[in-house]
Image 1 (tube, one colour):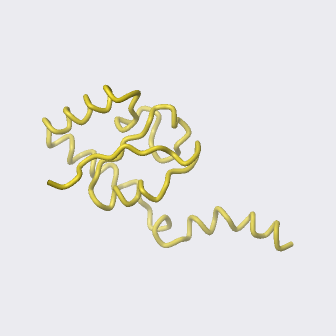
Image 2 (tube, rainbow, N blue to C red):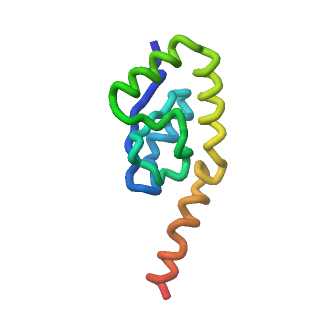
Length: 104
C-alpha cells in the first residue's frame, strides 16, 4: 500500500519545508499541527490542521471511510502548488531583497 497521509511541522511560522510539496506531488495528504497558525498555505480553519494525535487519528479514519472527501482534499491540496514554487521564482523573490542589501 502506498502512503496516504503525512504529519509535517512548519519550519517557522511562515514557511513549510519542501516535504510539504513532495507529499502533495506524491498524492499524500499533509497534516500540520494547529499551532502553526501563521502557515500561509493552510487556512486557519483547514481540515489539515490538527490539535493532537487523537484529532489526527480521527481525521485519518474519517478520510479512510469517505473516499470522496479524501479525493476532494487531494484536489484542494494540489491547488496550493503554484508554478513559481517549483521553478525557483518564488524563492528568488524571497531572497532578492536580502541579496540587494548585501551587495549594495
